[in-house]
Length: 451
Image (cartoon, rainbow, N blue to C red; front, side, top):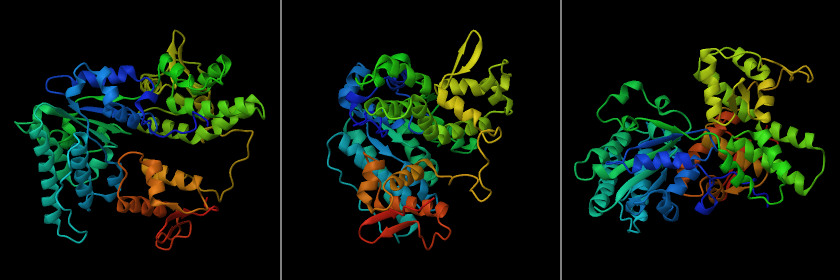
């Protein structure tokens, strides 16, 4: 089996690679008195979820912090509830149910939770049940006065899309005079937290977002991390490892893409090395373009910023320098005494093929071709990618949930909401789907002829 082919979160702490400086920064905050909240920001598939799984592991926690035995790490993934929206309070209900259950399970306690109301229940009853679940969490913390509770909330974007009382209740746990000094949050997000809420909310006394004074970016790997990652495949020689590093730079995602292609070629050497590079570049090109598009939308810079990186013929302007620093954090650019340079051949090729600089070697796409692929959210994209990999066959709900959420899978209704949003983006008539269909009593199937 290709050791680089599975790019899902790492559950086994023995397989977790590196991130030592990031872990040290997180632990510095958690061992403060009182513990400080921490936000880990990074691209999709950059290792954020794996980091939370690692922190949650008791075998991993002990060498991380000297007094880690006093920590309890309940984990919950807020991502599936983002699509339920603020108008559907059931999203808050399911989130707090999962948080209360995770808190009880982290201490091996029975999860005697309040009965959840039916879908058609009044709004006030839902809020009352959410409050009761919050009180359940508080009671567990009060009964275990010798533990500090570090709540690990993955894909915290989901909290920003739920009713505001969800965030306020989370904040209230840290403000309770009896338990507040034993509660903190480590959250992950694909975007800076400032994009998730109105800036005015930061100044509100009840703002959950105001708990996060700083953010940690999970970016490029260091040399030791890369060596450990590539060391998983003894079939690779030193030349192969150098080749992979040239293709991927220090970016985890691009290194995994490059390593998967090089590994397959090493075991089954059909085609040339140039063919291997082209295949890796083709797979990674959409992702690289999305990174560049995000950076240029975030930072003020002209197209010349891209040209400066490609040609390396001038020093960047102050505005462009911010983009290069962001690329450096992702492991895509390096700076030496001569200036900035692209660290990844894959990313350099993706930049040179940007739409505003068309290649002369290929004809333009036909006019009827769609301008952009569907604008999926991260979770929508993960579900769609899994269904497309299995196009033409029925995938059960459990199959989809196990593939995308190895730990803490969402409810069937939360998955159905994601399916409906995918249909909104790929179906000409979402109310009468023909591409992504539901098979009663079984699951979902994406037709093979789906574009």
